[in-house]
Length: 251
Image (cartoon, rainbow, N blue to C red; front, side):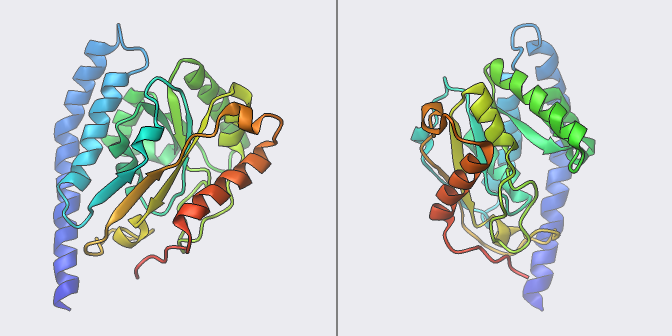
């Protein structure tokens, strides 16, 4: 019982910290956006600041030690279609720890979150209304422009967080973009986040190590002629090879 109370108290402090820092840091993001707009059309500096902002929540939380492997597979001069498995809200914060330039593909509800969502709009991240075909088509069109401008995109091809830890089937959108735009695909495997912060839960679950594994990129030549569905299944199999046994979130 004492442990439960302690976790609840720490969770309240964490969410308060997130709220206060978001209020404090958003004006800085606005200034960076305004000052760099004339010469930084891809918003590289603003995204770098956003990476710093998001990383605060794992840097200062000893319960969430993050290990990142495979950074050497990321070429900062390359434009990728980046895909990761999705287990927890925490995945988003953890992926910012890569400090690589990309645009998120995110559900439209996230853009409505005060300060955090407003910053997403400043960054030019791409919104998506799930279940809406027109929104999906618009997302694909916008993402093509993002890739052509030299910015990578980051997407969760499962579409939503897994409630059980078992990796869902991948939707074909990200893989269609990689094929059409002839951009390398960069798979990223996440582990540990579901235990740290389960889906539909806001109580931190004690100390849980988190790992991010960046796999070698898949060059466009390697999937030339493949269908998006086949490439999605192949990429999912690669990530399952790293994640292995499904991660079961704590109750």
